[in-house]
Length: 530
Length: 81
Image (spheres, rainbow over the protein chains, first blue to last red):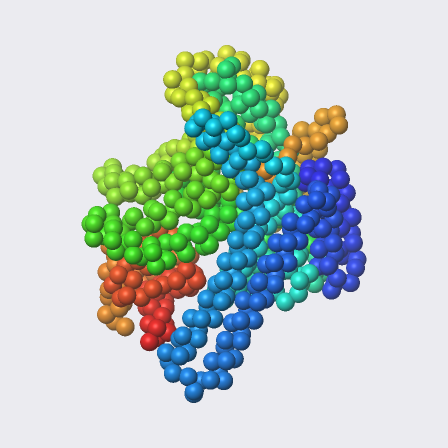
């Protein structure tokens, strides 16, 4: 049941009507029931996976917090009797116990994710190695279902557990309430990866019907449907035509294809997140923003601070920081400073940690080498930029370009093209194809396709190009307006005819220009794969 | 405390010479310090004061100003004593 299916619209409408009619104290229970119905409809077999993650994480978090409380009581009782050393020894011992619980639960849940998502990828690589060394024996592939949203809810549960271990959030005492946090249906399809401390503030509260909140939620959903159905699903035809036939479509077609795909990815993913946040908002639940106008970034580093923020901050808080400041890494720092000198030495541990983060980010995105290489390509570019930073500074000072509009536009354009090239790793499943297509773009002889009408043979008609041009221009305009505050607030401050035209106009655009067709079945969200 | 603060200002000044760290009180919130800077700073603090700052201490409130950093380092030193 996709966000864009008729069943989903019916499901949401029924849920919404019930939500504000039942006693307020049962609202969160209704959401839990709805989330499990939603999950059940996506595949009954997958329920066991989300249940295991929910139950194991819930009990481990309780166990960790219980140990922490017991430690505090014990130390309070024995305040006078124990020496400082004895207290420290006791604390260290208890911390070790909590750490073992934490690691056990993380390994179990990440292990489940690893098996269902990566088992066949691992088998395929082992088979390749066996083949390379001349062994005829091959390992058979396993048939496993990939539960919907497993990467998202596993990361969300693990993040919660680490927060409880660190003491930055209190453990949830009721299993069913925690089950809602893990399974809250709008975020199951493609995130965002919510933090318990943020989502729980409004998830369990009693919500009264407020016209403005509901209207804002619906407006946000509508904007998401516009991005998904008018832009992403329309441009998809062009993307598929180009990437499915590498022998015909190369050279300048790849340039067109990568720009198409980058637009599609943005419209698809941010549209889906708009729908997610909008659904939650109609029910009074606030979710964290996942994007801050990412394609306006002036560098790849900035882009990753503005794109899929819930994922990048998850990797930062739960992998990058702990790895960077762990004892072995601090020892490596001392060693590298001694061996390589102060300047290079002190950067080495940061680079090692970020390598691990980007490797993990690549693997998280998919069980194939193209995603791993994509992650490492990001890492290489970021590290090179970091090393070149002093040179950039000198250049900016020498030519006084910093802050100039033309230079900012150049930086935005450069970063956008870089993102487009990196996205090619996502388009082609074969690395040979990806590198071949990138090479063909730089040696292209067929740039005339941009104006000789060839683009009309990509599955997109002149009307499609017209609609896409207007729609993408609207996206850019809305992003520009967002810089001075919420666009919904800005529209709400206008007179009634303007508000009416804006929202009903958008509604009509989705109805009239959305990609439907006979036996309509909108394409799956790209990030649903992850 | 003053010595600690002076040394921290020196370390931060080397990282970003153009920032006035003494007056800034939203170093993380205003993205003056990014994750790379924070990790580099933690390793410098470990090197200089032999203080280990664990990952759970890496929250904006502890890194938003030089004073907040000083307070955190003092707390860790006290815990270790």
